Image 1 (cartoon, helix red, strand yellow):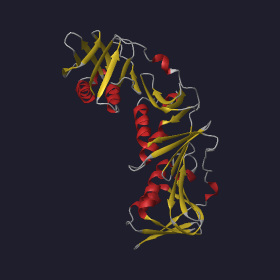
Image 2 (cartoon, helix red, strand yellow):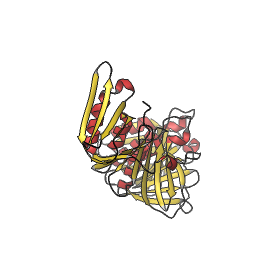
Image 3 (tube, one colour):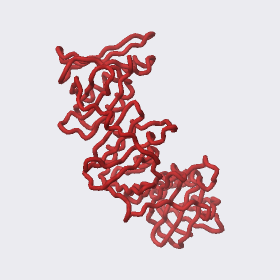
Image 4 (cartoon, helix red, strand yellow):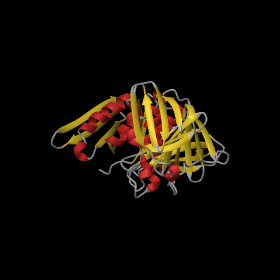
Length: 367
């Protein structure tokens, strides 16, 4: 194998796929990156058996071929080369790399033992194409509610599904729930994607990426964008019927600027560290105000108040400040709506619009 490629293109491809390569398994080959050159391009790929990342890099291919090479070494070496053309040649399982006055030889391994890269049948898969902004918004708004408890695998991913002719994604850890309505659809879909895969896709998307295609089959999902392909196994199992947890009606609501709500919640959270992050939100319908209160036994206490647009009755509820702060950080609207019914019913945070496409549910703390 012999080729020429620019340092910038190769650096980006190697940095992305090296994150997927794994040296923690019993298979040393998984700590390598696959380099495969055909007539017009260089394919750079890695896999950890759960997820695979493939980049197609434009290159001047002099001689086709393939090799695998240690991920960490090659990615860090190329990253530190000058931004010039890199000449790469493979002979006797050794990779000779030169760029300007820099030359290096790295021992490689034949690709016979490298796992076959997974693929989704594009003709049979359920396919969606989203704008990059819609995809980023949907993932960032739901992934924060996913669980990290490996004993309940179905809760550690994001649930993509069709419902009432629309595509949704949702996640929950049992204490909070996030649901995003994305677009209209006529397809039938139920698939749980690992959060690690979605985080990898978010990290790889460039600022100038305009759209992303998602392909789902019964066991895998593939994300296609630019010259990148990320394929992952789906999480096996049935996602809980979460919609029954969303209250149909609430007794109290208020509308407030997201920045103001976030500020008073963060301030209250500073005093709530000793009490597991617990804060109390109190609505006064006579004064048209909401106050957020927290107590730290050894430090002191805090109460912050804001004028709001109110509806319904006065009331109070106690929440985990971390959950509320994280939910507010991903809201798209300048003005948000917060609803609750007493001290025990789930609380609802949405955009303050007639038909919000994002809901974040937080279970109250039992005080």
